[in-house]
Length: 499
Image (cartoon, rainbow, N blue to C red; front, side, top):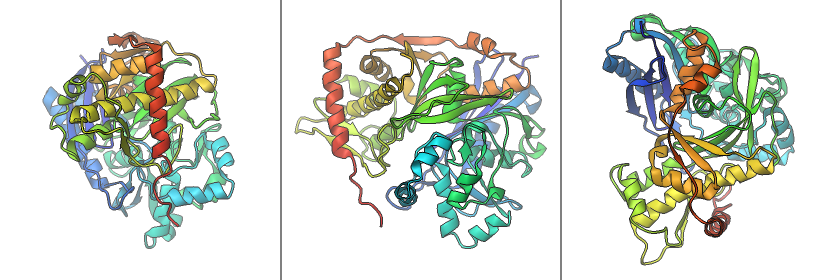
C-alpha cells in the first residue's frame, strides 16, 4: 500500500499543504493566502488565528483533493516562516497579541541599545547571529514591555512563546505539545548553537523567562500526534525545520559545500558546513541546519529580506501587472533595465549589510522608463543580492561552488535563473520538485517513520529539471554589479532612527 507524507508549509504570505508519495512526487497541493498587517511603517504582523486556520484549511483540502484519508498518511512534517514571534495563553491557547513577523523592525531601537552596550560580539559568538530586529528575542522583549500583564504572566508560566512551528504543533496536538526543533530555535537569538540549548546568559541579558520557551527536540523524530479532532484520526508529527533549512534538506544538500537559494518573500542562500559551526566575520549568519540522530548539522546563511515581495509590491502596490505569469514576458520585452536599479530595502537590508535603516529605492529613471524596465530591475535585484551573499561566503573561505540549487516561487522564472547564472558565473540547477521547502519537511518526517532509510536514498530522489549555464561576458557582469553596489550605498541609512 502506498504511503504518503503530509507536509505543512506555513509561509509569510501563504499557508500550503502538500502530500508526497514514496518517490517524493507531489500528489496533491493546496494553498491559502495569509494577509499581512502593517500597523505602522516598518511594522509587520499576522493574526495567529489566521495562521492556524489557513494552514488547517489547506491541509484538509490537500487530503480531499487526493482522495485520501488520514489512514493513508504515515506522518506529518512542518516547515515554517522563521523568527516570527507569537505569545499565547498556555491554558486557553488564546494569543495575547498579533504575531510579530520576522520582517518587522519595531525592536530595532533595542538592538541598537544592545550594540551600544557592547553585547553584539557575545551574541554573535553564542548564537552565530547579529543583534538585529530580524530575530525573535527582541520581539519577545518588546511584547513583554508593551502588553499589560504580559511580563507577570510570562514569569508565572501562564504565557508562552513560540515561533510558527511551535504554534502549529500546539494547535495540531490539541494544546498538548509545546516544542520546537534546533533549526527554528537557533533563529531566536536565545540558543547557544555550540550546545543546542537555550542559553541562560542570553535569557538574563534580555530578561526573558525560561518558562516561556518550548522544548527543543530533534528535527527528525516523533514530536507527538495530531489530535483526532483535527483530521479525523491521529497522525504522527515527525519532522520539523525552519523553511530555509528545510529547503536545504529538500535540495539534498547533505554534504559540506553544497548550497541552495530559495526565492520566496525573501531570498535565502544556505551552504552546508557540516557538523562544525563556522562563525562569519562579514555579516553572514551561522545557523543550525538540522538535528538528526544525535548529530547537529550547521549552515552558513545569507538572509535577504525582500525578493519576491518586491514583485508582489509592483503587482499589488503599483498595479504594474495582474498575474505572476506576466513577469517573465515583461522582463524579456526590453533588452536591459536601461540603467534602472531597484534596491528593495522596504524593511532594511539583511546580509551582508545588516542596515536596519536602509529603505527601498528605484534609481536611474528617465522618461523612457517603462513598467517592463521596473519589473526587469526587480528580478535583477534578486540576483544581485544573491551575489552579495555568495561573495561573502567566498570571503569566509567557503569552498567554491560549482552549482547553486534554486527553489521557491520565483525559481520557475527562466529569466531570473539565467541572469542568476550570469551574475554568479556559476551553473544554476532547478529541481524537478520546486516545492523543496515542503519536501524537506516531508523528508525529515519520512526518515523518522522509516518511509525512507537514509539521506543517500533521499539523494537518489533529487532530479534536476533544468540547468542554466552562464553566457554573459565577465566584463559586462562586473559593470552591472558595480552599479548595483553604487545603488545600495545610496539607499543605506535612510530611515530616521527612533529615539
